[in-house]
Image (tube, rainbow over all chains, first blue to last red; front, side, top):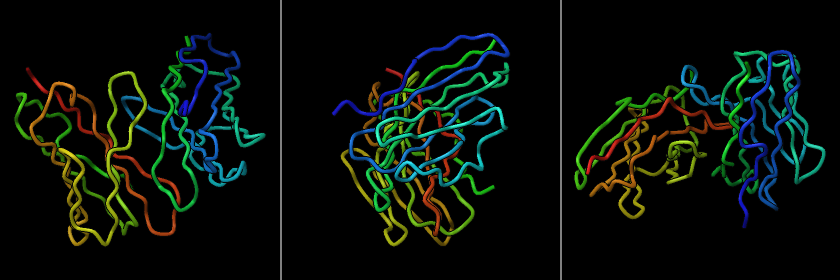
Length: 114
Length: 111
């Protein structure tokens, strides 16, 4: 099994640009989570999906952030426009189903906004 | 905040010694999990303990849970250099699906 796949692994962009982060969960997993990790705030849950449906987006910091899951094998997190304070490592994680709580994390995308 | 709090924030020990990390939380939980994060990597699940369990073992890992004190501990015995990483507790609160992660303990094993 390839595990959770995220792309790109590193992204450097300038303030005001649109950024799209991508995630492919483990095949057969029904839930997908997007996290942001910074030294100051630790690991924060941004949004999660069950069966491709957004369940809780209360962690999305602003309207500049949006997430989609068009099918069971793909999700995107978009930031438009990006700001320097968005610089962080963004993780995607998936779980097999609602009765299984163990989360499987991807390697993360390190985003730097200049 | 419902967030779990780890203690200590950083721990440095000699190889072969035991390492103990603690986690406290504030509300009733369904289960508590421990994850490891190596530098520059994603988190890796180590062990899950349910609210009706008091102790669980997995290899060199021992986890305890005291729901009356709302606390858990992770013990790593006979530490190795490869155990150097950050360790996070994550709590799943009753009625919720999402996990809430603590700030982590940074463990350094000195050769």
